[in-house]
Image 1 (cartoon, chains in turn yellow, green):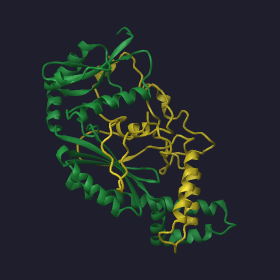
Image 2 (image 1 turned 90 degrees about the vertical axis):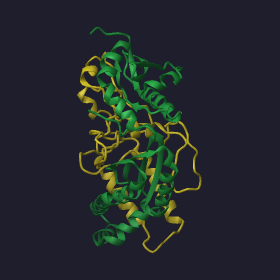
Image 3 (image 1 turned 120 degrees about the vertical axis):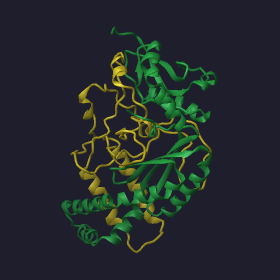
Image 4 (image 1 turned 90 degrees about the horizontal axis):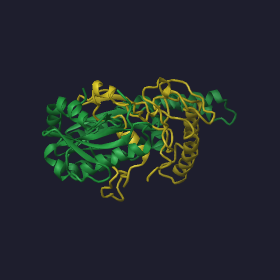
Amino acid sequence: MTTAVANRTGGYVERPASSSLADVIEVILDKGMVIDIYIRVSLVGIELLTIDARIVIASVDTYLRFAEATNRLDLYEHGGKDLPELFNSMQEGGAKHKTKGALSGAMDKVSDTFSGGGDDDDDDDSGDRPRRQSRSSSSSRSSSSSGGGQRRRPASSGQRRRRSREDDE
Amino acid sequence: MTAVAEAVYVFGIVPDDVAESVERGDGIDIVSNGSVAAVVGSVPADRPLGADDLRRHDRVIASFVDSGIPVLPMRFGAAVADRAAVVSDLLEPNADAYTAALDKLTGVVQFTVQVRYERTGLLREILAGDPNVLSARAVAGDPAASTAAKMRLGELVVAAIGRRRPADAEHIRFTLAPRVRALRVTLADDPDSVAQLACLVRSDRTDKFIDTLERLARDLADTMRLRLLGPLAPYDFVPNT
């Protein structure tokens, strides 16, 4: 994943030449083969990096952002330049705000062609170094998840860290 | 068990017959039981793993993918006490399962497709198709509108996105299905995202897969953005007991 495959330019599909830390976390963390219980108990107490990703924030902020975006939409404008620019700047502003909180990576698996078990996608709040927490610690779910005055409540809809910051090495 | 300073980190499983060709630099070594082999390194046992360790895990696994060597990635964080335990606890009990999985995953790679909504186009469609959103917008658009009215609009919009997400993801799955050997869809929970699709693709058919994806991305460009990561090891398609 870290190695680049030739990028296609000018296409519609974005294909990053190298993966950001956010990509690595989203794509491989909590994926792969699990070793069985017997070996896990001989683990010598290694603590695992865990990302408390399943905290879903259905914030007031989310609704207000979408309301603002919807309000600003010009129904009769098609393909104009001003609107997308408006939205881009708004989204960037929102991203800065959002990276303060730990945002949800909770995903619902809907299709599982192969057998492979209950993998969930984990996510990190920002591009900063993920928090190090013991997997055995049950307190890992909620710590340092809410910052910047965002309100959090467990609900069905959430927002996730936007990849506004890349952490390429 | 007494604590030791170092443990043996297990990156993944490879066929025994490629073990000789594996480059052993960067603290990477191979432990074999004669039928399958584990790619191992050492890891301090007295500190938690972090982002650098995750990066390293990714790099080591990716090096096999790039060399065309089938590899079963372990979930990040797998470690055992010592090299003897790699053979006795990991390889010996699981050799048959690992061999079967390696056979099945030879000649294929994983691509992961991340799909996000393109907000402007998406909101246009939602407004055009939902009279409730349209009327809530009329209320919330008033300069003197209350926060509650704006919240109501935002809530309706986010709900509308949630209602269409499964169909949007299904359309993508359906379009890609003929190009993949297996596919897993994970629906997003974030209003700006659609889904993540893990696709198992034959190595000699990746061009067709990418062409199909490109056409799909063009067709969906008004409302969605597609992002492609890979080729990756088959993280989403390894056996798990």
